Image (cartoon, rainbow, N blue to C red; front, side):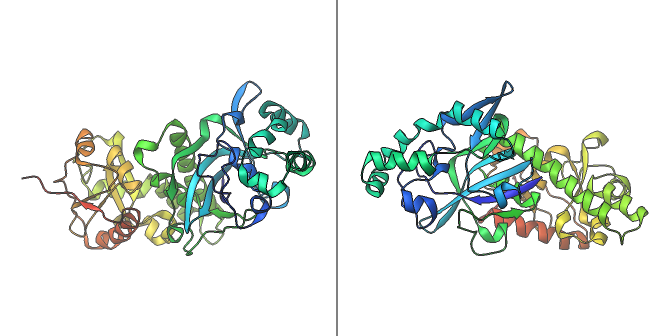
Length: 374
């Protein structure tokens, strides 16, 4: 899976039609609107082979979109007023190449009725100022201004944010700013895309969010395993051990079961089937020695592991629970967890946990230290 960060024109009205925001570059600056401003419009629902899809538009990715495979995660963000915000996500997205499949694009345009969308654009005062007369604008629309949707994604994996999400570029790419040119794009690892998904408030998530997040989970593991398999300098025995460790299996899991007495480090649960062997320092940030190090592991029950893996909880140097701003005490108790819980950390585990805590604190600028119960 290719995960793409793609800049699009800012629309303060939810991307259901042109909103008249003044752009500083590209097509929107010259014409008063951007084609991506319809991306969340009900008109962009289409049916293909009897299945529900969404049609979208962005500036091309590479040469006629050739840089985008047929299973792209498209993360669309907008820059405005000194901010950069995530606005929409399309999972399992397919780039629609006009030259490659003109029949598909014709079908999409007919269903959206793109030829009639000029009316919505013409209502925007900024567009009227740019063109002067309706006739001039219609001429522009019919010659090179008509919307040509160039992406489709299944309806089940289309997620438009109720409220745009402020982005911290340093947490995503390590740079102070994401690209702003509409023709540009940035490929990011699946785990950074997962970070963005996890940054969306819990009460804003829906079935589409869950579908995309699950696909990222699989893609991240798949990518990591492929990297191990392609590493020629690693012998087959070590490759197998690494793959097992990435999946929370094999010797890595056995060592964690032994060290934790076959019980969850947090809850004490001893049901083997729900125990998960997870890495403390993320796989992508660990070398091969650290990936196999049981001190870089934590044995947790599945629900606690999910919270830990997605940085909704962490632990301080003494093993006390740290709670994300996104989770409150009541929700914690509903999972059978208590704010008074703590884990025992071995000295080397504390070093690894410091890395997890740093990422946790980056996602939660004012992390909540779970108060001890009386």
